[in-house]
Image (tube, rainbow, N blue to C red):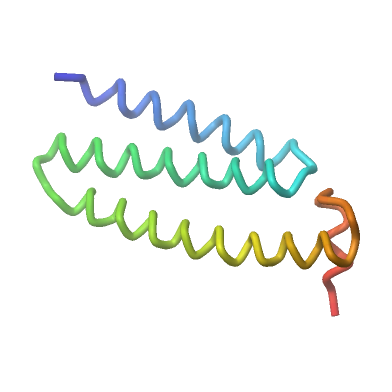
Length: 100
């Protein structure tokens, strides 16, 4: 059986990589992928703690996070398509174009 701290360290590593991607990148698609990485690291920790404590609530929370992630991706891709139609760039600095 894999120890709990391996799962936690994997989740922390993925969270740090995702946070660095969100804070340091300027491309909207890379930022969205980094947000997905952040949410997946949270899912790993939910499932690891749920398995460690023999409780199914961690898996239920992980399913909720996956559902929220799917909704976030759908909305974000719609915004990206609208941004590309208005201005042919995907830089975060050009998002102010969408103000109305």
